[in-house]
Image (tube, rainbow, N blue to C red; front, top):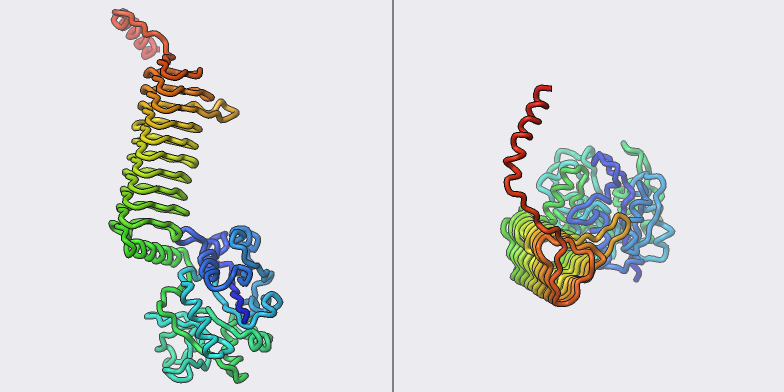
Length: 470
């Protein structure tokens, strides 16, 4: 038996007031549509997933290309029924299709699987995923043939409800399963005789019932799963719900999160038990945090790996970097892309790194910039040290071998090699390679002129008075 998933993602989302396609807006660090595709891929292979695109089709296809699904173009958006008509040729040969909405990002793979299994067990032509809402106003209501029957008599839109039907709380989610043959045998019976002049897929329930086909409904365990977003405010609510769910999942696994309502954790982030996350931390993208770490407040970590027992003090920014076990960062350190910080290394306050590999136990504790550098183990980088890696045209590398001591306020002009165990005197500008165990100095000799200030003070005052009176 062949089953396809068809995801409707062609709409504009005009109520978002955005130039960006609705399904490309993000919650939890991923586009709405990507959440839906990822859930579907847990049910069927990617080659059995078909995404119907229309508005900004090129942009949608480009951003979803890495997921290896199929795309169907709905050149003219004439409603959900028309979208499924456009999919007829693509799903030819499939026995059943599951129809999902590209703007319902909280839908779980387990619920999709439950819909599929219920649909097959009921031998239905159409199965409607429903939800019971506290306030169902604005949604179409599902009318069952009897209160405890799975069979559906039809779907009634809000404007057409009778006073008695308005009391019903079970709504149509817009997510369906269809047996392909009866669907396409009767889909041309859809009409545009409605306020918007569109073909509504919801009308298939009435059409199939009138044709004597079996139409059933399955209520979702959590109504939150089927919620979409039509405004930016609603989008923010979905984002908060997803992120709070991620925090709860991590806490259940053994991660301590203080004030989980304040943290921002993307859906793909992994955190190992016994790590502590303080308030107002952001963990973004493909980030992995090992066990026994502590991430202090206001730190932002994106697409990075922290191994075990790493301490990240307040206000650090870490992007596309790898930090090994026992390292200590911050406060207010900035690890830019390509930084690899070794075991038990220290990157201190207001230190910035970029494309740096720092060895075990090395330290840069204060106010330094280290870019395009290879730093060995047991190295001490004094406060204010700078690797001058850019000559205005090209980037160059600095190699600092094991056990080097770099004095404060040193300037290392790349390309340069600082040999093993050597010393760089404070305030030196080093432009030549330094051999092992050598002391390198690169600064002007101090000159002191006694009495110079007193002798010039009167002249300076006279000059200031002349400027003032001119």
